[in-house]
Image (tube, rainbow, N blue to C red):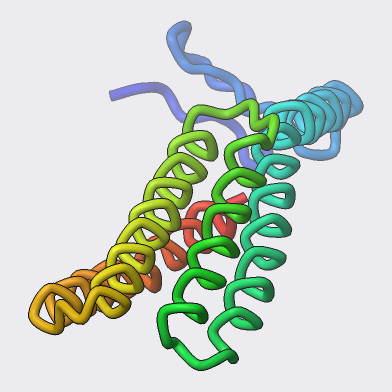
Amino acid sequence: MFPSRPRGSTQSTHPSTVRVLSTHSPTYQSIIAALLTLAASTLIACGSPRRDDCKTLSTAVNVATDRIEKAQATPLDPHGLKALADALEKSGSEVEALKLTTPDTQKLAKDYVTLVRDTAKSARAMAASGEAGEIEKAKGESQNLEKLVGGEPKLVADINKFCAAE
């Protein structure tokens, strides 16, 4: 059993007891202030490239979405499908040209580019099949197109989730 210490004392009489630093001491407050400053500057410095990449990628994807929605407003006959493919390819090229610095945003951008290019390819194939009167082939491309477009909400959710963590 350790000897008791006087009431109100932070000092222990046992040699291995660590004294608790008072939260009112100038030393404690200086340490806390220094740690908070360090933590804040680390968060700002480390978070900045990711935040900037997220903003850049989100802006580019939103511009692309507007362009694609405008192209989808036309009838999706062979001519409309070609216009849609053009809009998709332009969007893919713009996102691909982004100067992203973080590996995660680069991967998300690459996934988006792959999606829009595959969708454009399928839209062109569907248009060509329709023009050639190859109805079964056009139906197959239509199913492929629907499958590709069905993957878009997950990719957008992945981008939003990643960027929301910033």
